[in-house]
Length: 306
Image 1 (tube, one colour):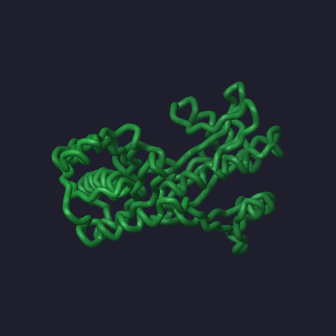
Image 2 (cartoon, one colour):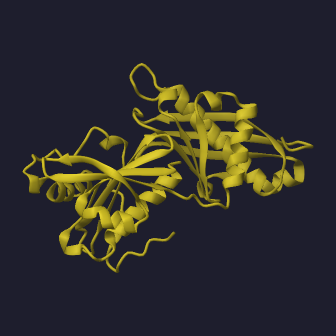
Image 3 (cartoon, one colour):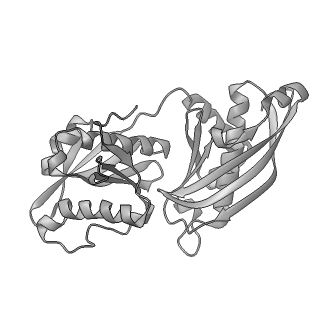
């Protein structure tokens, strides 16, 4: 679903130190300062694993903020939603929430849970969230209520993703051990998620070998989807690969690849029964890029699709 922000307002992902400073400043001003909390209290231990979005006005002033993070492989939590008082009533909160929900679906999240302040109950109810009951009281006076929403993924490619998952489990047993799930595809972007607990190393971060396997299978899966869309049966093998690890991955990994950034020659496959695919996969922890994989996959036609 396309976002429809008012003229002059744009949705952004904070990336630079200055952008994050402005993003956190609004969060502090609206959610912590009125209750006499110190600066820094608006940031928690899951910040580095989050998906952060903000809305800025025509002067690049941050007017709305929100964060999503994974709490389980298929479950997420939204926190720190806030809209500047001068901009309330413009639909910015709803658009920001919708943007976070779209990111959640891409990352394999089927259920979002959150703790809403009492003043925000009507807003979340209007956005399709179910009230579960009282959660906690913050600072002795700010009541919070547990709420959740089941997200609906686009249905067009769901059967194909389910088939890919079955193929993985039947023919590549490691996908079950690593708990890899092909969770999103729209013809352009393909996303695979990995469970955190199944892939931890002694440093409590994701094992480098698991990251490599996740990236490799994401590339393999993208090639599989290209063949499936054209009903072309073929055996897929990894011919060459390179991976660069940028930083430790502490949360729940998602691997993304874009059709527009990959190279393939399906006409050669149709004519000669073999082809090569150059695929780039990026592995993220929330918004943070943790690894970049480049793989060369070779495909040879088979008599029957496997």
